Structure formats: C-alpha cells, structure tokens
Length: 254
Image (tube, rainbow, N blue to C red; front, side):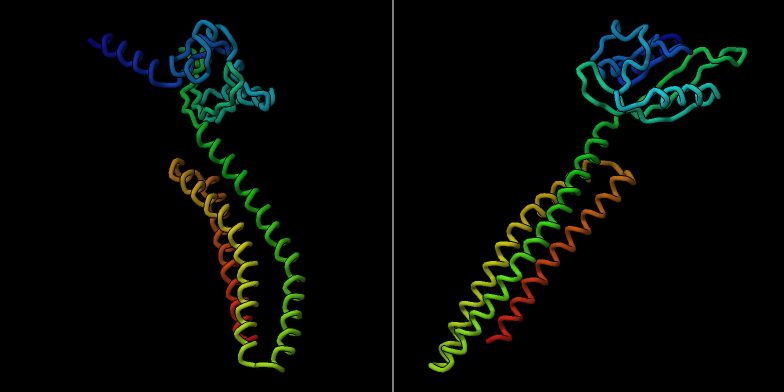
C-alpha cells in the first residue's frame, strides 16, 4: 500500500511540477513533464545534457560557477533563473535547489523544484516601458506649453489693442465680443493640449491597473506602479490648474 501511494505521489509530481534531478557534474538524470512543456524539449533531448542547456545568453558563466560553489556547502539554495527554451524564447523560473547527500554526507545529486514567474517579469518590463513613455510625454507637454506661451502673449496683446479701439465705439458690445473671442481661442488651445494629454494617460492608467490585478504582491512592481500613478495624478492636476488659470484670466480681462 505504501509503495502504491508513493508511486502515485511521484506520478503527480512529474506531471504537475517543474522538477528535475542532476548529478554532481550538472548532467540531467530526470526531468518532469512540466519542465519539458515549458522548455519545448522532450525528455530524450534533455536526459544526459547539462542543466546549462537552458542558460540564457545574458547569464554569465561565472554566475553558474558561483551557484555550484554555493551548492557545495550542502544546503538548499533559492534562485531565479533566466532561461531560454528550444525555440529561443525567454522564460524565468524561481527555483529551489536541494543538494542530496549520501550516508557519508557527500553530494551525489541536485534536485530542483521550480515555479514559472515569466509573467511577472513580463509585466514589470511592460510597466517600466510605459513609465519611460510617460516621462517622455511629460517632457513633450512641457515643451508644447513653452511653444504656445509666446502665442498666448501675442494673442493677449492683439486682443488688448482691439479692445481699446472697440471701446471707443461701444464699450458694452466690445466686452461681449472680447469675452467670446478670447475665451473661445484660449479654451480651444488648452482643450487641444488636454485632449492629447489625457487620452494616453487614461490608457496607461487602465493598463497599469490591469497589470496590477494580474500580478501578485511584488515589491519592485509596487514601487514602479506607485511612482507611475503619482506622476499621472500630478500631470492630470497640472491640466486642471492650467485651465483654471486661463478661465480666471478671461474673467479678469472682461
């Protein structure tokens, strides 16, 4: 009965867990179905090969050597591997490495239990990219405001001159005309800027919210997410302040 349950346990482990065993030279002697599935290799292609068959080109050889040195201390070690599958696609595994010792306390085997964290890294990369785009957008808006600043000054002088001429004819009528023209022109310019500004902000805000919903609590992601949300809030408030200032300017002029 005990052997039956033991057999069932290992079958379940093989089919549902990213699991492997390697000898002290790093040669794979067992791989689970889940590891084959995520790597794209068959068991026949992996058995007897070095575990470094999964090593991503970005991972330096000295990193692997340092890892083997840590395992020589004969204690479990947890690490995140950046790997590459058979088709060249990157995947990340959070792995617990467990050294297996014989009766003489000598290392004879290394067992690896892994968890796929590729989605977490992908979401972090997307968020970092969106954060960079957000900063670029902020700079572009600042430049746009500077470019329009001179136009605002000239527009004000032009309306002031027209106001002085028109006041000589009919003060009441010109106030109405001045108010409509000035308010319409300024609101249109600010509205154009605000529209180009808010749309990508809203899209980015929704995208980050969705990424956060799909991602479990990870400190690195939370910090970038918080910074991006603060930047969105500040930029949105800048638009509102900008519009309010111009509305007050119109009221004071009329």
